[in-house]
Length: 322
Ligand code: UDP
Ligand code: MG
Image 1: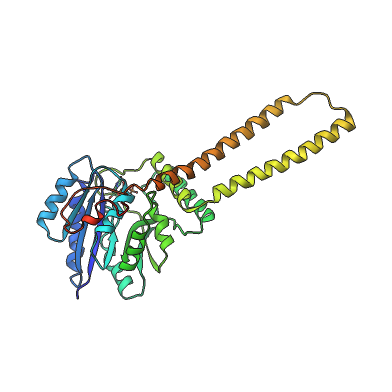
Image 2: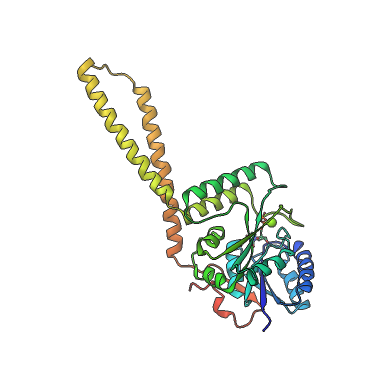
C-alpha cells in the first residue's frame, strides 16, 4: 500500500503566493514518486480572490482539495480544520508564502519513516529580514515561556512540520477554542526531529502579523500553557502583607519611643497608588484567565466551513465541537 502525505496549507489573502507555492510543491511531489500526496488548501475567509485561485488549482490537479471558511477564524483554526480534513498517513503543515521550503518534505518524510521519529519539524535559527525589535520581543517571549511553563515551546520553531497519524489524532483530540499550536505540539509529546534552517522571506503578499497581534498571541500562549502569573499574584500579595505587618510594628514602636508628628503623607500617597496599581494589574491577569475560560465554556465550534470539495467530511464542518 502506498502511503499518503497530506499537506495542509492555511491561506489568508494568498492569491499571489499560492500559485507560486503550488509550483514549488509540485516539483517536490514529482521528486518523491514513492509516496502519494494530497494537498488540503484552507481558505481562512480571505478578502481577495484566494478561493477562486484554489478552485482553479483543484480543477487542474486531482490531488488538490480545498476547504473554505465562512469568515476569517485565524491561522490556528485553519490548521485545525486542515488536520481534521486530511486523510493522509502523514500530515504536513505549511505556510502558503514559501517561508517553509517544500524541499524539506523529503528529509522530514525520511525522519518519520526510517529514523523512528513521530514528527519532524522546522526551526529557524536566524530571524534575518525581520524587524530587530520584533526579534527581540520574540526572544524574550520564548525565554519567559520556558521559565513559566512545563510545556516546551521551542524558540524559532515554526508550524511547518510533518507528523505521523498518531500525532495528528492527538492534536485533533485537543479541542480547545483558544489554540496555541506552538505549545500544543510540545504538549502532545512524541519524538520530534528538529531540522534547522535560515529564515526565508515571504515570496509575495504581506505578513498578517503586526506588533499588537503578536503581543496578543504571546499572551494567549502564556495563559494557555501556564498558571504561573496566578501563583505570582498570590506571592506578591503575601509579600505585601508581610511588609505591611512589619511597617505597622515599626510605626507603633516609633510612636511610643519618639512621639511621632504627622509627616510623610506624600510617601503614603505613593505607596497607596502603587498598591492600587498592583491590584488592578493582577485583576487584569485574573481577568485574562476568566475570559479564556468563558470562551471555552461557550463551546463554540473552532471554525465553520462554508464550502469544500472534500466529500464525506461533513462531520468536521463545525470543528468537531458541536
Ligand atoms: N494565515 C491564516 N489566517 C490568518 C493569518 C494567516 O490562515 O488569519 C496564514 C497565511 O496565509 C500564511 C500563514 O498563515 O499561509 C502564515 O502567515 P504569515 O506569513 O502572515 O505569518 P509569518 O510567516 O509572518 O509568521
Ligand atoms: Mg509568512
